[in-house]
Amino acid sequence: MRFLIIIFILISALGNVRAQLNLDSIKAVVNTLPSDSLKVMTYFELVIAYNRLNYDSALKYAQKAEELSKENGSKHLLARSNYRNATVYIKRDEDELAYAELDTAITLSTQVRDSMMLLSSKIEQGRLSKLNSNFDRAVKELFSALELAEIMEEKNAQARIKNYLASIYHYQSQYDLSIRYYTEALSLVRELNFKPGISALLTNLGETYLRVKNYDSAIFYQRQALRIKSEIGDKLGMGRVCVNMANFFVDSNSPNPDSSLYYYQKGLAIGREIKDTQLKAQSLYGLLQVQFMKESFNEAKGIVNELISALDSLNDLNLASKSYEQISLVYAGSGDIEKALEYQAKGKILSDSLLSNERVKLSQEIEAKYQNEAKQRAIDLLESENELQELSITKSRNERNGLIVLSIVTLLALVLLINLYRIKQKANQKLRALDRMKTSFFENLS
Image (tube, rainbow, N blue to C red):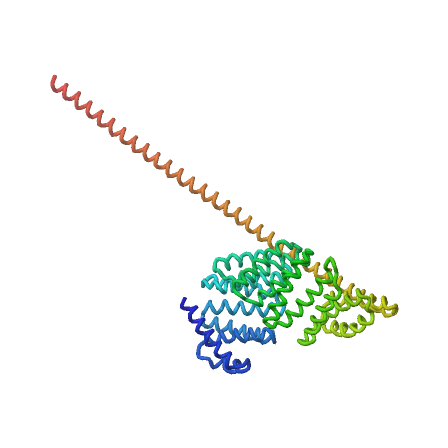
């Protein structure tokens, strides 16, 4: 409890520092701070800030925090340092190092009974496995974290975990489970009145209901999400929901090109305003589809250059492949066969590249699964050998103890027999002596 109070005071003090100083100022004063604990906490703040800007700088400050924590001998701060190291390694795609740091953070936080750090580390571990598409491991780790979060009554953590679980089940096309966990997470964030979380989960639910072709529920949740994102000023979120709603009007049983056009244009306007290339590309691709559906080929061709420019700035082979195929259809529809064939060829190249990447990814996943299974088999074999060895030791110990007990019993029986023999010998000697005395007495009497 004393440590938690100290941490609370340090965080409060740090909050005041952050309110007055910018990032460069914090860097300038960090070495002048009187408290090593406060210095470590300041390093953590620098890690968080640089994790969005420069991963090398973030790692440098995370390692400074770790070194200082070791010097102080504080397992509480060291666990947090390992956790921060892991968050940077995840950003740098150094997953093995991230796993190692999280394992250490879990071990240390367990030793010092820092439940909050233990929970955070377990959640991050599950999230990392999810990012690596190691879904079996992710589900196991996330359920372990969920059990702890429920014991601690940490509703925000429970909501995060259930959101991750729902997204895994969504990816695996287990939509009933996905909807269940998204709904449970939504209920939790509504209790907390956390509007960004509410809007995100409403969006996720809408997308999932769209996958199962429950169009009424899909549009219901997307409209709620759009309203909340508008209230909190989340423009990127608004743009993404607009694209989702436009997709709904394209994919529904009764396609509505005009409604789709409206929401794609709205998403494009937001993408241009906030300069989000991904949102722009998705909106432009959607607009291209709708204009093709309406046979408005001139309007569609007016979109092509901006779409290609956006795609060139992205590394999204899937979207690029679909876009070039759609551009080819637009030019074919307008009668420009030469252009249609040109873009069809470009789309084919991208499609082949995408397929190649998917094969590589699948191969890597199979290899990773094989390695994990091999490790598990080795662990199981080692455990079996240990059990056999333990059984052998126990059997030898029991046999030895049995021999010792038998030897003791035999020795005691032998001693008892010897004593009985001696007692009998003495008794016989006394009887013979008594007979001699009787004989002598009667002889004298005669």
